[in-house]
Every structure is written in structure tokens, then in C-alpha cells.
Figure 1 (tube, rainbow, N blue to C red):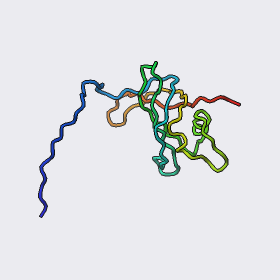
Figure 2: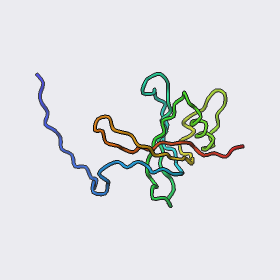
Figure 3: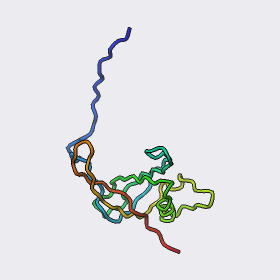
Figure 4: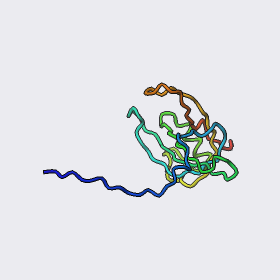
Amino acid sequence: MLHKRSPILVHIPINLNEFPDEFESLPAGKYVFVIESTEQKPTNDGKSEKLVVKMKVDDPSSPMHGRGMQAHISFKLPILLKQLCLGAGVPFDSNGLDSSALIGKHVQGIVKASTYTDANTQEVKESSNIDKFVFEKK
């Protein structure tokens, strides 16, 4: 016989009044990011792999300082991954790269904003994506 458990109520010490009611995308522009983590995952359709790069704006003079962003970089179109490595100063060769070497590195990225229609609510929403990473051409 299964016994139904009573829910456990836990106090969460966070002032939710300090946060907006909705998530706001990072506005279009050029930002300095610090890379916090990388993870290889299958793409949504399962036909390829991607690198998910979690990063934060790291520029104390910017009002966006501390804002997080993720870049989903498909291995089918590795140009963005090459730009990321070049911009962060992470070496690679014909055998590939160690994505953990990206963690803690700084890189400049150009964020592009776009709009889309939510399939469930039909609301027009905004999203932000990395358009490219900046690096010095040799």
C-alpha cells in the first residue's frame, strides 16, 4: 500500500521583487563575455551534435554586466566554433579541440536580436543569438 506524503514547505530566501516579471533578451550589440561552461549535446533533431556554451557579459561599465547567454553551435556549421576559439585564444588542430579549454576565457561576441511568433500563444516575442565572435585576423 502506498502512503501519500504531505508536501514539505520550505522557505526560499529570495526577494522576487528585485526581478522583472518576464525574461528580457540581451539587446543587440557587441559584448565581452566570459565563458562559464561548455557541453556537447545532440541537436534537437538528433541528426548532429552541438556545443552549448554558457557565458555571461563581463563588462562592469555595461548595464548588461552579469547577464547570461547561451550559444548553441552546431557541428554541421563549425564557422562559429572556429570564431569562438580564435576570439578566446584557444588552440585547435586537425584533430579538433578540447572545449573545456574555453572555460574562463573572454571573447567578444556580436548579439543579433530577432522576433518570432510563439506557436502556443501567437504572441510576438524577441530572442537574442550570437551572430559572430570577434577575433583578430592574421
